[in-house]
Amino acid sequence: DNRAPDGKYTVIVKFIVDVNGVLHDIEAENDPGYGAAKEAVRVIKLSPKWVPANKYGRLVRAYRRQPITLIIENG
Image (cartoon, rainbow, N blue to C red; front, side):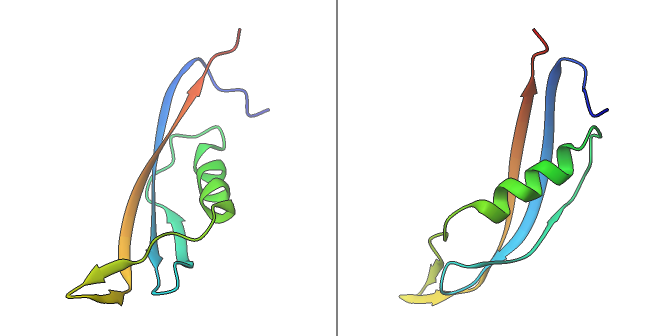
């Protein structure tokens, strides 16, 4: 049972955005438990293409760290 107590659970997901906006090497940096890390990675994998980074007018690959906060309310 993954039922988490009420509260906020933040997962930092790290990945690379390539020049086409496709995400690679997606993984969670931390895991607060209750399946939060797995869910955060799942959500990032389902996201549409991202806007690639631009350096000196050229599109480049970029490393990103994205916090995802899950708010649990067992009402």
